[in-house]
Length: 164
Image (cartoon, rainbow, N blue to C red):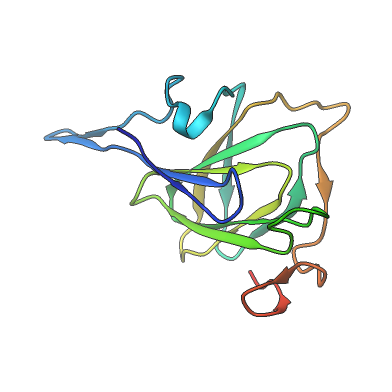
């Protein structure tokens, strides 16, 4: 049984991974095609590895062709945020941020139509693998970008620009 949590933005989910420890260490499944409550009918087409120094922000960007990013922080700690700016959306102006940590293996699923990004919040570098359901197109990348300190991204909780 998966422990999937839905967050305030539709489609943003976290899933605690089951750790199976023994005297050698532990084993954990990361993805299974039958995890419908996390993945629906999507499937992974590419896996990427990201190493970021403390304090590094990689934001904001979004994908317009249906890409979904599923992050797994392996080392350190990383804040992963998503922001909805779609006109007519019931969650327009909402932001969700989640801290992923290497000590607590968890999948953090972000539908790519939300503006999203990351910041390493640990005193050590973060190492993150993330899985996507679309292949990267080198000739026509599926990314729109905004600066990490864009004053138009307002944190509804504070009424001020989002602070990483």
